[in-house]
Amino acid sequence: MSSINKMFDKFNAINKYLFKKENLNLKEKYLYELTSYTISLIYEDRRISDVSKTKIEISKAIIEIMALISYLDDNKDFENEVNSYTKYLEKSIYLKYKDLIRGSFYHFDENKISDSDINSLNIDMIKLITKYHSELIKYYEELSNDFDTDSITLTPVLITTVYIICLKLYPNIEAKYKETLEYADSFLINHPLSQRYMIYLRSECDLLKRVMNHRNRFIDISNMLISFSLDKIYLNSETFETKFVIIMNYLSNFYFEIINSKGDFNLFIDKIDIDEIDKNYIKLIYEESLNLNHRLGYSITSNIDVYQEYSIAIRFIELVIGELLKYIGDADIYNDFINIADAKNTFDFENQYLVDKKE
Image (cartoon, rainbow, N blue to C red; front, side):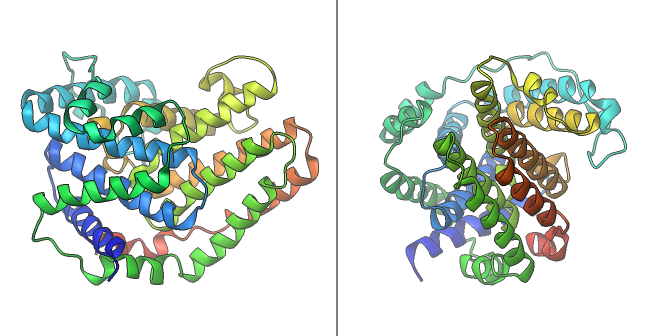
């Protein structure tokens, strides 16, 4: 067994153990996020040769979570602060959208959202990383400045560091066959429905790489779309919020660059030609993803049917990409891209083998 298989199997065994466990404490929530993000990093590193913007953010998140775990060990009050701040955010976000989400696939109960006396949480990540993982601070600063750091060096360092943490905390947890990288490759990625999905996805990305106007931008978008979709195929949903925010911010900034104007995410969404209810769902997803994230040990799966959420988000991302293709006047590629996206979204494969996530 290769070293990467051995480490992946450990991460996934711990991840599945924590996924099934009820009433996780904050450290366990961080470890759940940490293993999820590292699993995603391994998937992407093996499938995408370029360094995507999403990979940069996932790498940053891994460094942040490791620092937060160490900080939590030294500061027991931090868990109460995080829990209180999370309640504040949940209340402010969900009450804002309560008419939209009541009765939907969101597990929303207004009576269970508590008041909190904490409405801010200041975390100096540079300070924490410098104190607890000084060997990674250079990488983190480069990633934060969107500098193309040496991911060939960084990725093995991150994976190995996470493995040491996991080995120390869970020495006796071993992977069952369905939790191994071998199984993920042989069953999930090679599942007939996954293969069909990948054919459509590659076709979409090949089209985007043919765009000559703003070529580098569309190459970035292509890599992010693959990254986001790989987690959907592998049923690794916990990276959703980080990847969704970075993709939508990138598309939003690109849009305002094209029209030579300035604006925020909500203004950008309002300009996209889709149903008003869908727009509000996307705003909710974005706001939740931006605020209730890995720094709080907040798994998106704790509150929504994330697999349905992935389908909505990917479809919306494709619609936005189509709008950008229209804005730059590439009608032929726009038509082909939307036709492929429509075909890809006629089937949804999660429920076909979702049981493997929970077995």
